[in-house]
Image (tube, rainbow, N blue to C red; front, top):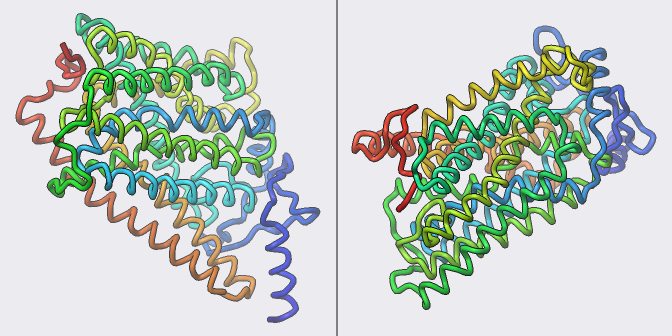
Length: 483
């Protein structure tokens, strides 16, 4: 290896734990400030070279956000991940069997943790990275930026719309179906709009702590109530169930959705006081999520058998179900707001700048309310167009969650590392080759699953509408309430 390669190798290893970004968008790599890496040409400009003024302004804005400790981020991560996903898992277990369910959930959880670490590394090792779209810009220029901006925003909208949908279903059950579902969606988005005015995770943290409690309590209640009422393991359970291909595929997509918090990871990193501590928050959060998901799906399937349903709270007796749905609203609205705030942190400064974002005078506040109001109105329209639960989760997974949780982080991390090695003449050791092969394989497997899954989910939705199982969009007809 040449002297230059040895120096680059040493610098690379020294910078592995780099996380401190100056306000102007650069990092401190233990005293070293690396130059931007030009990765490819795009209209005569090297991809990876950022406009100094743009990076400086973005850096100033994000630097003001950095107030959260890793323990706070751990709770917020757990709140965001532990929610919608677990409500459909007992039904997933009935489709694939308890053995297939446990293996799949553990494997998907481990891989999701790996890609979460990739996101942290992309953030801390590259100049000017604040969001997914910035990674797309670094690697593929303007086209990459625009594509990732759409996927990134779609992923955040999925979290917002999915939790708003659950809020509507929950309130419908609380009211015993006496109020039109459209009305509850309007109530849900009004509450989200109000909380979105808080603008940062720091201002929302106590609400998010309460939100975590209010998902654990209803699910734990279900875990206790169902075994007590059933008084024995169901007779029709299977370790590995031979369901049809489409049913199995939809079940896999629901499991993918359970770990779909990655669309907000860059937002969490942006508000951390020490971004390098994100791994600690991620490991604790994912360990809890995997254990919780496996327990919920396994226990409720073992006692409920093939009669399990989604959302899982539908397995409770009528009165208790209504109470628990009331509690779960306190979870879903803050999590939906979490996604709404993330969208606004990206959208609002594009129009009015970071100074207006951090200003609370009447002029800046009215602008923020206008932009957030338009964004939430669009989200309300999305939710009203697809008023059903499990298929919405599957469709969401296909559109964005698969990409942002598994495919995109793996592909971008592999591309970034491969180009860095090649540019600096670093050897492709077996360890590095193994990483690249594994990351590229994960990216292409995600793309294949998304393509096949999209066809399957669309077919499922069309067939249900044709059979009259669901009413038309923007109607009060809904299967959300069970007598």
